[in-house]
Image (tube, rainbow over the protein chains, first blue to last red):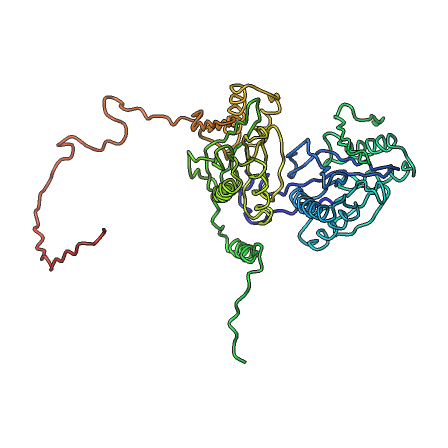
Length: 228
Length: 286
């Protein structure tokens, strides 16, 4: 998930001066979400790059879609911001029509519809997670291409390739909220260590019936692993 | 069957036909060895910082056309609304027109709501327009202002993504300016310190980036007041050529003393010209 689409129109010498206007702003990243009994834990790194320059080192990739539904964004920053804004509007409208809180599956379906319909034009990998009254905590992943599937734990972004082994071996069903937080923080830290496009701080969010709790783990507070 | 005159319904959205044509033309021209005319870009350093009472925006004043400076004193800080200003980097025409369009729409919106416009509104309008054009509008903007919810600063990229941050830089000189910001930025600065910080950041861009130069413009926005300081700092003053050397002016004076050139011979030839009929018609310019 690492291709930047380049703006091809002016390939003259003067373009070297404008290194950031001719490269798309990417949210190459590491994102993750885990279900637990009673809610979900979501996490993301905080780096947005334009080519080799970090445009924003404190990005918030955990975007609120509704009161108890968030999404993690990866891929093109412009595409994912636009999609998230559109889905936020659609879900808000739907929720007012229903006069009750929307389902996480509805939000994920809206993302899926948009990502699939415009799959040729978009580059967006999204993880939708939240809590609703019908099914509790849920995580749905909508990768590039527009598939949607529900998973108990999901990772995404360019840094996810480095932590599939860690996630598969360390995930246990029926973990508590604290265990999930520790698991997510460790997985993201490992990915950020190895992936050049991920870094900065670790942003975490816990969504449950009580609401949303957000945390930030700064660089010097990240869990330490013994490496060479 | 008779030919039907096709009235194509406008399908909405942006038509990218011309972009494909331009790409083909570019390829053809490059094969012949020429290069297509370059759009005038504002190779630029722009930046903004949020301080205690508001926002300070800064920009250099050089506009380049390829490797030539097209305008030594262009204005890159554009008016959006009385409390919101926007610096633009990228293609000069794109930043100019985009900010004018959004400024106009925002004024209508403000009249409709009866309230002073918010920075977030301007941000939404700009990002949705730039996303609609899929990055073909080369406008990278730093949007800042003060509204009822406080001071806000956004950076907006040509593809339509935005970041809300306490300090931002854009343009070719953004790395130099960001270096200054990362070193000296503190939250809740005083106005003088903030102005000095922005001035130094733009100066770093001017002196270390070829695409930026000339003067430093500043725009300080606080609740109810905007200080548009143009120029705030003339960092590159044009030198004055020395007026006289050895008593004689150095430049611009081509009058020579009588007798400098000796006259060898003199011939006078009268030209017999006929005056053809002359007709004067006054133009009605009332």
